[in-house]
Image: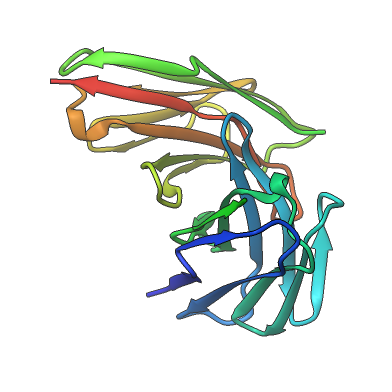
Length: 111
Length: 109
């Protein structure tokens, strides 16, 4: 069966510091992968998605970037965090039989 | 641009008191409507996918229905463990979803 991992689970970072969040998927090959941010009162916002290694589509221009160095690895990064980057970050993959399945999430607090 | 509106924003029920959550959508061409359950501090858990008007799916106390403009999530005789935020999303192609803001359900014993 397929599983999706995210780490770290929680992160507290100062403004201006860099960020790297990692997502890996097991049990599937060449999945479509997604990064979402969930902020209070704003719902799930799609940030990036990838249909393959090195292929990244950005949905919202911002302070963040994404990379896909391996088939089952998706990384979300920032060079300098802003207060507004705080939120709950979710990685997901697309199962062609059903829909999107989500990881456990990373709670990021920028102080 | 796809739009999804969920109502109510929050709903409080007594255990056993049945009700429905609404998801209204506007899409150029519906490729699927999705329901998720999300517990605090966790990722959304997939519940159902509906593809065409008239389709219904059930899972335990939950039943999802779909029309050309909206979907309902019916909760029959809810229990406290059904308390969660329920999210609705639509897919109109390109393997991306547009989500509503969710309905926060609280079921009291």
